[in-house]
Length: 224
Image (cartoon, rainbow, N blue to C red; front, side):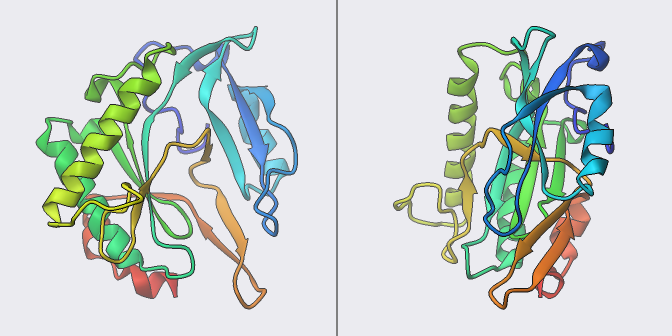
């Protein structure tokens, strides 16, 4: 797949034997305009090009030929600004703390990836096994993922001396949140298209960034 969305799979995994469920989102309603469709992984690049590589998503689960879940991943954190009050610099600071916390827990740099989401925040992806969570699908995965996410939220709040409040995933005084894990992930390298308050269609690309870009870019100037 383009830019290797499945970088986190265990070594030796045959991607050609797996399927993904993919879906396309309407930029106006922000709803998925079709049900998920299952595609063999080698066929996904052509599918995304047919949809102009815009607002295209994949399932967190990967399936075998019988649509039985086989893998789940990566461990995924969605750091978002408050809707209607986008402060990407604040989201970048939160994301930096997330990454530093992970590195402090002996997660190696090769086992994580940082992305600009293409609109109002950042994503951090982690190879599940690096956090003691399985990438192979199983009934206990969601419990392990939820525990890891709560631990990260607590670490960020403590680092910022931020008092926990409802909702408990708010991690800064400006309202930035570490959002729950969703069932779909926007494909890396694809365009995020949305309608802004003036009715204008805007686009930005979901892209991999370095820790230095995260720390030192003027993200609010970029978002403006």
